[in-house]
Image 1: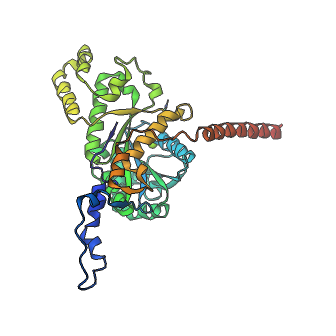
Image 2: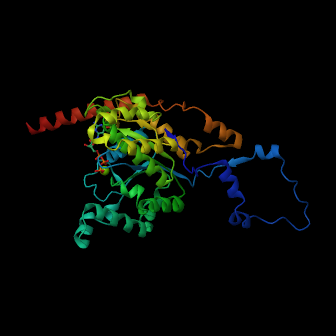
Length: 370
Ligand SMILES: Nc1nc2c(ncn2[C@@H]2O[C@H](COP(=O)(O)OP(=O)(O)OP(=O)(O)O)[C@@H](O)[C@H]2O)c(=O)[nH]1
Ligand SMILES: [Mg+2]
C-alpha cells in the first residue's frame, strides 16, 4: 500500500552523503598544522556511525489529492482531528481556491492570495482554466505561502489541494509548488491520493482509477499512498464482482477482462484495456488502503492504520530518534505494530463529553427561549 518513490526522507545514505557535501565540508574547522591525521574509519566503525536527525528542522505532512468530490476536504478535517487527539500540532492549508465552505480552521488559505471568481472574470476563463491559472500564480508567489508556513514549523501540515486531476499528472505547477516548499521548509511529505471506492463496482471505472493513480505517482515523485475513500459507500452503485482484496491489492487484473467483455461498450476496447491493465501490473506500484473518514470515531482503526503507513512513508516514525544506521534499517523493516491506540479512552471521553456538553447547551438554549 505504501510506495517509496524516490524517498528522500531520512535515508541513512542521504544523511551520510550530506556530511560530505562541499557546503558542509567548507564549514568544518581545519585541523591545526602538523597535527597527526586521524586514521581512516574502518568498515565496522562506519557501520555504527551515529546519525543525528535534525528533528528541529524537519516538518512532516501530507499532500491530499484526488478527483473532484473524492473526499479531500472531509479527509483534511477528519485527519486533523485524529492527529490532534493523538497529540500532534496540526496546520491545515487550503490550496483549493474553489473551496468556499471549509469545515476546518485554515492556517493558510489560497483565497487570501488569489480568488478563482476574480480570475475567471478578469481573464474570461472557465473554472478549470481558472484553477490552472491560480496554481501558476501560487507557484510564482511561493514566498507568500512560505511566509505563512515558516512560523508553523513545529506543526504537522495537511495540504488540501483542488480536485482537478490534470494538475497532478499533466501540469507541473502543483508539483513545483510542492517541491519548492519541500526545499524551502525542509518538508517530508507523503501524497495521499483519494479515489472514490464506489468506482470498484464498475470494471471500466476501476481501470481508469488505476491509471490515474499510477500516472499521479509517477508525476509527483513523492512517497505515495492510494486510498479508496468512502469505503462505507463501496457498494452503493452495485455489488462488487470480487472480494475487496482483489481491488485493494491489484494483483491479477486479468480477471477483470471477463467482466469487461460482458459490457458491449467496453468489449470494443478489449485489446486496449488489456494492454493498459498490463502496464499497471508491470509497474507494480499501485495498491490501495481503505478509509471511511466520515465515520472517524466508529472506524478509528482504519484511520490509525493509514496514519501508521503515512508516518512510515515520510519518515515521521524516525523523528526524534538518534541511532546507528543499523538501528534505522531495523525500524524501517519492522511491521506496523507500534501503539497508536493508547488514546482510545481519551477519544471516547472527548466524544462523550462533547455530545453531552452539546446536549446541555441545547437544553439551556431551549429553556432560555421559553
Ligand atoms: N459516506 C461518506 N461520505 C463522505 C466521506 N468522505 C467525504 N464524504 C462526502 O463526500 C462529499 C465530497 O466531500 P469533499 O470533502 O467535499 O470532497 P473533495 O474531494 O474535497 O471535493 P472537491 O474539493 O470539490 O474536489 C461530501 O458530501 C462529503 O460529506 C466518507 O468517508 N463517507
Ligand atoms: Mg475540497
